[in-house]
Amino acid sequence: TDWTGQPTSGKTQVLMELLLNTSKYYGWKHLVYFPDVGTNIEVIADLMHKLTGKTFDNKYKNVITDEEITEQLEWICYHFKILTKEDNSATMTPFEFWDYAVELQAREGLQTACIDAWKDMHHDYKKYGGYATYLEIVLPYRNKLAEDNNLHFHTIIHPSKIEKENGKRPPVTPFNLKGGS
Image 1 (cartoon, rainbow, N blue to C red):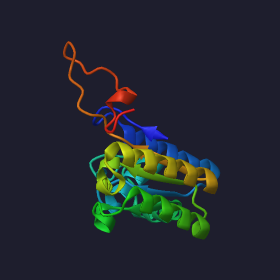
Image 2 (tube, helix red, strand yellow):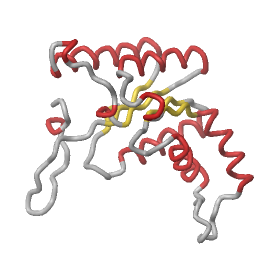
Image 3 (spheres, one colour):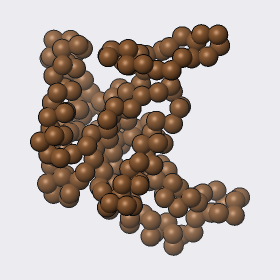
């Protein structure tokens, strides 16, 4: 599944909710690379907030307790393998990421692998004859790997800058995705 939308429109937040629900209801496990969310601690805190509906801010009544943090941390670490920029600093290619997901599936029973965002991966366009040719190779590779291994891959792709019309940005179309339709 490829996800897109305007900056700060909630693409990652909706995807995280979907992942949490598949974990809660079906026991699914996920490999996630969400450098835009932050460090692994920030990703875990975001997941924990969504899971419990509680805040880490002491000025509110619904603050999460230390006991709840311990309990939820174990659950989150069981269902989520989190890679961060510190782990790969944009040196990992999508090929390597998806291959790693297949390896984790064999070892730990993974169901999904998520990239947010495509721009934060290493893409060796020259090796594949340019951007368009690269996409013609990398995307079928992803699709075949997913199908052959019964994995679901999510990719967040940012749109190219869309000019405002009458003060508002129009909805994103496939032609606005970086790399084209």
